Each structure stands twice: as C-alpha cells, then as structure tokens.
Image (cartoon, rainbow, N blue to C red; front, side, top):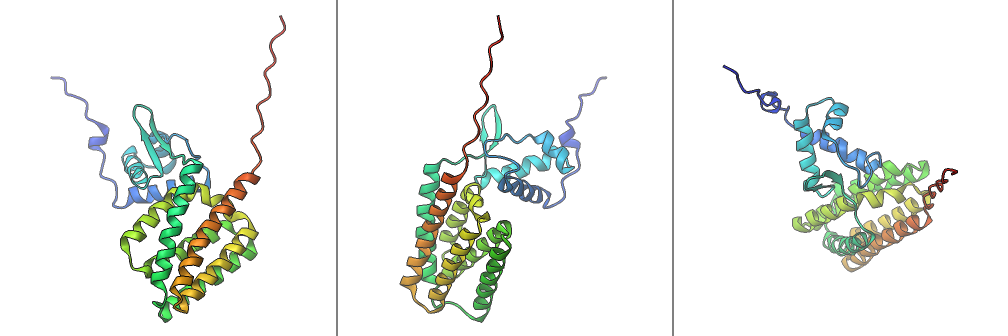
Length: 241
C-alpha cells in the first residue's frame, strides 16, 4: 500500500536552542550594514543555504525580526526589509527626544561609583572611535550610553518604547556615524548630558538629552541631503529602421 510522503520539516531534527535568535542577530547585522537593503525580499531558501541550516530556524528568525519591526510580511509576496518614510523617521525622533529627556531627568542624582565608571569608560571609548574614524564601533558604544541612561531612569515601559524606536531607526541612523565631525559633536553632547546627570541637575539633563536627539536628527538630515543622487540610467537608443 502506498504511503504518503512525509513533510521534511516535520521529520527534521529540532533546531538547537537559541539558533533562531543567533540567525536573527546575523540577519539584523546584515540589514544594519546595508548588505541586505531596505525593501529587499528575504528568501528563506537562499538564507538557509547561506547560514548552513534548514529553513525552520530561518523562518523563526524572520518571525523575530518581524516582531521588532525590522521586516514586514506582505501577503502573497513574501517578507521584506522594512522601509521607513522620512516623515515616519522625523516623528519617531520627536518621540525619542521626549523619552530620552525624561530618562535623563530621572537619572539625575542616581549615579553610584559603578555607573560613573561605566559612563567615563563609554565616553573615552567613543573619543577613541572618533580619532580612528570608526563609525561602526562608535555606533555600538553610543547605543550602550543611551541604554545606560534609560536604565537609570527606572521606567521600564519608557525604556522598552525607546528601544523599539531605536530599532526602527537603525537603517536611517547608521548612515551618519561614519562622519568624524558628527561623532565628535555627538560625544561632546554625551559628556554634557553625563555631567548634568552626575551633578543632579535634572532639568538641565532633560533639556540637553532632548536636544541631543533632535541634533542627531539634524545631522542625519544633513547627511541625507549631502548624499549624491543616483545616476540616471542611460537612455535606450531606438534601433535603426
């Protein structure tokens, strides 16, 4: 008697714990680096081949990225890297400025010796990245500086909302951290925020933190304005008759 062919996915061994998250992290890095571009379709089969795994963990990893808003599923078409409009970007920056300012105000006067040491280390690392022109490393340390202030702010819901906004803006923000001048101005603002928090000057910390986010938005817009326009495709000549 003929037997029904088994679904390969059903008979495949379960993926190792954490594999989907590891793949999601790798895909996230590819997206943030621009190797996988906004609007690009994620092909499960091609990704499975590239990552050396089955399609199951790839599918789970894509679900993780969908959950954080980095990719979008389009019915009957597939999953695509999310594209954010300039208007969405501007609105998100305004919300980030409010949340970051609030966190900085709440963090004022909350520093202990451990926090002070970490802030100083982060600021020193970002100074080094400025000297080296290492935008990739600066960006990562910058994220930790902001996260530390959100942690000290003590509002977990605000921290989660802020993180969600940061994730949505990765594709825009990563562009301007390669400019040494932008990195130096950014870190000068970081130090001023830290000094206000350390001094317990909550109102000043709030003002400086909110302004820092909005200044970052202006740096990004300036970088986008300075970017060269894509070259126009050459006109196709009509064949001679």
